[in-house]
Image (cartoon, rainbow, N blue to C red; front, side, top):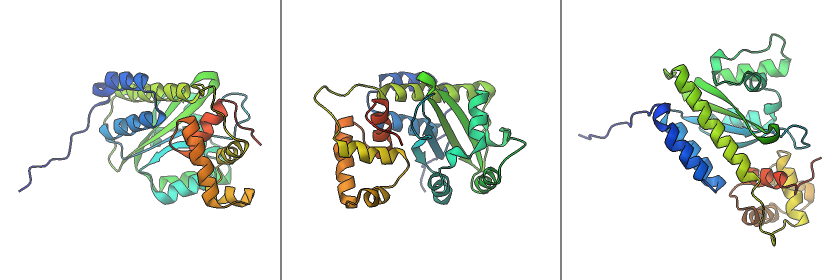
Length: 252
């Protein structure tokens, strides 16, 4: 008979100090993402998404999804494919309210468009209990975190909810700082690399970008891999955000 047991969830208060120290010491975005995923798992979340939103007055397109793990594939495809970060009314509700809220405790506008109402009904059919977390960064660069816990809603106290939000805030601040770390003086993106990343920032897939630029998808991947090395990142979304933060991209 096996003596293995499911690890107990950690309480947010138990993780706060160690998480803050680890985040502030982090110098790689990939490592920061891993810290956040581990934190979410340790408090019992089985899904997490992090959207990074443009700074105030920026010409950047509306937010990009930096982390998305554990949510139903059809919900993610529907949300990202239709750029529903622009539609979901709960995101602005959470950002303007300034505090962590359970999904089912978040107010929705009395007047909603058909697209907003249809999205919220679709999302509600796909997820269980979860948290909305607002985050705020330099120059009004906001972040939005969504954490799913499945069918059973954890019994977090108000203080624990505040500490979960604080962890999200610390991580968002560090992410903003790492995005703006200057490149080495001898490193510059090529015109083609900037062009590809500009389309990534518009939410286009590699295949669509290849069609737009009339090159092979393999060529797009090659341009992205070169940009990853120059920007010291490991994924296309972070590469686009980092290049944009450094003034390397032109937004349409």
